[in-house]
Structures are given as structure tokens and as C-alpha cells.
Image 1 (cartoon, rainbow, N blue to C red):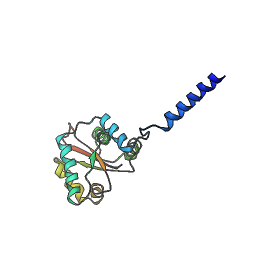
Image 2 (image 1 turned 60 degrees about the horizontal axis):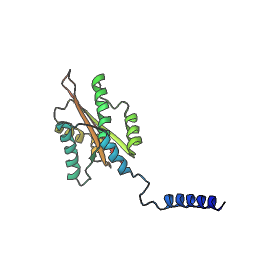
Image 3 (image 1 turned 60 degrees about the vertical axis):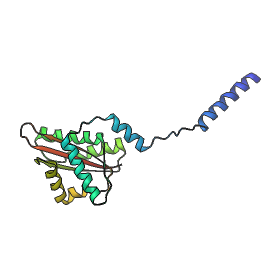
Length: 169
């Protein structure tokens, strides 16, 4: 009987020690999650996409705002919409709620917004048009922390489609 009590006591003490004296935090922070998601999602940025992101960040920096961090997952969501617009020969924000909700669900975003452009041959052309549009400019200067982009050219028409998604995470 004493042996059984000792074994039970050791097991209980062992469990208490393991659960109460851990030196490693058990919480996963949002930044840890973003890193995992960003590293696991693969998106190959073109020079045009990088130039457009740089235009946005340089503008934000010039007016005293934080620069935005690109997230591959957001660029993949942008690419899905670019491909949809090309396949359907449309320029619109169709299904933005679905894209936004997925970014919120996967990345924990608190706010998501989107700019699109069509038929601008250069990043500066699309960027300048966005700045001239109050609602598009509002997204560029908005309270965001991250962004993604996709720019594709329709092989049949030669026209470029831009989708730029912003998120506050």
C-alpha cells in the first residue's frame, strides 16, 4: 500500500512540476503566426510588382507614415483576383468580401482594403491614378501595416491588371 501511495505521489508531483514550471511560453503570438504563414506561402514578385510596392512605401514614408510589409499570402489573394478579372474580361472588386474574410481568418487582420487598376503600362501610371482617386488614395495612406500585390498582363489583349490589397494586422 505504501508503495502504491508513493508511486501516485511521484506521478502527481511530476505532473505538477511539468505543468507549472515550464520556462517556455505556450502562447503563439500573432507575429509568430505571420512569419510562419509568410514563409510557407510562396509568391515570386516581378520587378513591376516590387516597383509598385516601393512607390507606395516611398510615398507613405515621404508623408510621415509607416512603411508596409509585404506578405506573400496577401499577394496570392491578389493574384487570384487578377486571374479572375483576366479570365472574365472584367475590372471589378467582385468577391472582395471573401478575400477579405480569408485574410482576416488566416492572418488575424483587423482591416482589409483593396485597390485595382487596369491598362496602365507602368507602375507609376497606376500609382499616380490611385493617388488622384480619393478612395484609392485613402487606402494608400490608410492605417495599414501590411500589403500584397499582383500585376498580370492579359496575353490576348496586352493590357495589365493590378490588384493591391492592404491589411492592418
